Length: 388
Image (cartoon, rainbow, N blue to C red; front, side, top):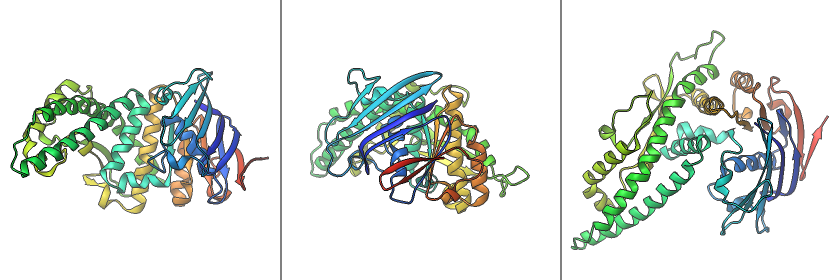
């Protein structure tokens, strides 16, 4: 899979940009603020309908413009599809495939797959659980686009139920018993959509964990092929169900119906605490991805270098898992080499050099390892110019 052509209009700092791409390595070189990251961000948006830098669409539209447009021509196994996305802050976004009739943006998910390495990845290891949940859910949708709907349904139900908990809790504190029948209905909705999301995440972690272990060993390896600390990296799913989580074999898919029953039981158990606090205490929104070095959590115990190795390992593991699924994703390395020491730069470059398409951004050519040679574009003063 590779992107053959990128065109953006009023996206971020670009009134217009037109970029012909090809398989292999492409390097975009430009000083900070010249817009090189904006270009690869547009490619990432075409794949995920989201940005790795901001949580909403509004900042993606150039100041003074009403909308932004991103067009990508994607080639996969010899077949080319044109994906067009129109970003309309405050209104519904629109999408078209091969210049056909307008469709829902969610329908384009799966046409382009990307794995993006960026300085923000360190937050997956060192940040709060929300960063790790987002990592899991983004990868889950990349593997199976239907989970975009599952995640959206769960978030909608969670908002409704949380609002109802606050209202019911306030009524109880005011001396009224309140009618909890509506809350029981929302319990059912939360358990149903939550069980699907939970099953997907558990299956994903079981699938990616061996890749994480191998990728960490590769990134952190010394000349003898072992990590300097000798500790093995692992990833495990930690559910808010705790001991109530049904036992699930890593070799078998999780059962959503069994998980739904477990969620309903636990919701009933914590009902008094939820009414008292006015928040939903059980469900995928309270879960975490445990990242371990040996038996210790990477967060709080890993050094800066080990944290970077873990962040890189998670992205490499994602790449290997998606490739194993049958569609090798486009690799995007956004200003990541400037953050790494010499050894990790070289190791990462060696590990990604053989991918079908690698897009690299860097402030100066010297930041790019020699292992990643290919087409180079200079990005400056609102222009993208191919060099050589």
